[in-house]
Length: 586
Image 1: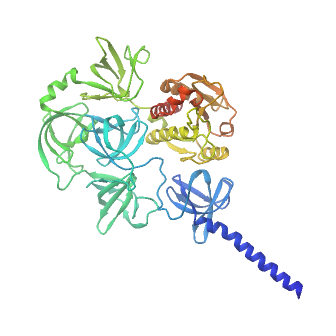
Image 2: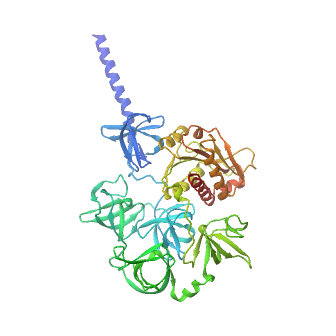
């Protein structure tokens, strides 16, 4: 009897112990969540890439954490379902009472106003990206985010980038994200589009729309649009809408007395001032027109070919009629410097010697346009030349545009690896600069450039978190990356050491990528060229993809530390890496 009682006691003890152990992950779930960082993430039956896929989750969705094992996290999919996801593809946070929002590497809010005439509106953050329109002086747009010296805005139903030097206004973040109020209409392009209560993929579903449904657009907030149609109001992602009109129902019309020049390659002329208007003709880039009436950012125009009708005002660079004659002369044409250190040369090619390096905000009178170069007036009677694709202009009817390098990285899968993170600070500069912060900041600038160019780009970390070397490589191998870029900043006991170095492991697989990156990074950063070198680093050695590890300057060098911690340097470094990748894939 005693033995039987003891057996029963032990069984109960084991039962309660097991219940206590099993309760630990459940209690933790209330205190920790993860947010999915990638577009679609496989949920697996076990903590390994070889385990079966049991579900798929989407970017921005949040899940409670049940358990952690090595580089894997077990999440709660539903009340009776769990699965494993790769730790390096999610963001972890404390507290389960947060409103789930899509993880973003940049923040939103505010409005900006164009402070320059004919400010070019680009598809990405850099002059290598195509011009998609003009953000005219005095017009306002919603501020979306900043990347280095560039600002992303939402303007007239489109998103794009402008140079931060030529806008003014409130770009500070606030607790409640500001929205651009619009009254456009749009057409649904998806077969079935979910409408949500809030502007996030985790927002409650309030209905759905069928393809070609026409909806009214009330607000734009980041990549989300608040729409309204009969009996339904909510938020949808703008990737699944085509804007069909920019017409305001109660807009005021006014008689204009101005002239302008077409900035689009081909601009449609319509019978009324909206995108719903019937196309009755077209005019080409550089055509000069007279503006006889303005209404809600649409211009009624006429030209020497007797073509009269309405055109989208954001594709017209406008000038007052009384100044038209003066503006047609060379004396009122200027280039505006967009970057510190912009080269002004002795002739119209990159092979000519550099006369001086100009800085942001400087302006020079244009004497002539020679190919893709502007001939400009310097101090005294000195003449110089500047590449048209690296500078802004005013008073120029047809600004120089160049087929950008963005075309070569489009659809390429690229993994960016910001070195160090979390408890691993990396090198520490003499002024206390942390390597882990610089690598993340530069990586985000590069991410924005590549993403805008249409690349499939992934970060191994998007915040100050520790990621193991094996997880960084696993991200590259899992994504079948076509290039892996690991960013670092150098340090050594010799305080005079300076410059950039790019490492590769496999001469057959990696050396060509390293060489292309080295050439372009040196051009942009202007630091000492330490060349490409063999490096037996884990992230290079174990990587299936062509891989390079970049040391972008020395934190141990006091002068160089001051340089590399500036946004302008990080912007130039990111542009150099972008250009190097474009050359590699070209």
